[in-house]
Image (cartoon, rainbow, N blue to C red; front, side, top):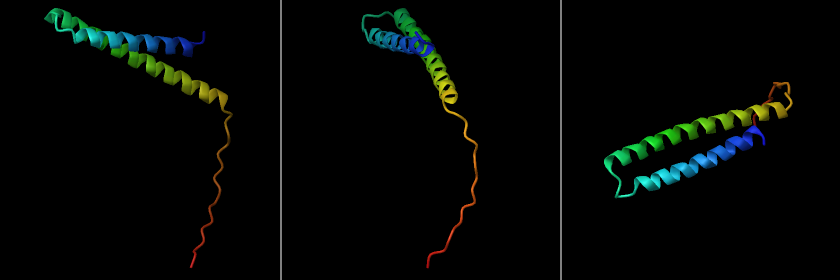
Amino acid sequence: MTELEVLDRNIHGLKELLRVAWRDLANPLLTSFDRREARNQINQYTAELRRHLQLIEAERSRSRKQSLPEKPRRFEEVKFRILA
């Protein structure tokens, strides 16, 4: 498995964990301690998800740069004409 596939799998897992944590937080039977723990888990999962998304974006931009050959930039003179 490539690094992108691993990151993608981790992202899907973190999204699922966040979904479950939010569902658990909505439970009216939770004590205040359990609610605080659920919020802490949500914050932790969100930070991990953000980090994984940044990693996958960096990996994709790196692979894009490697796959595209560099073209020399040419600046041509633009000739304007006045239409009457």
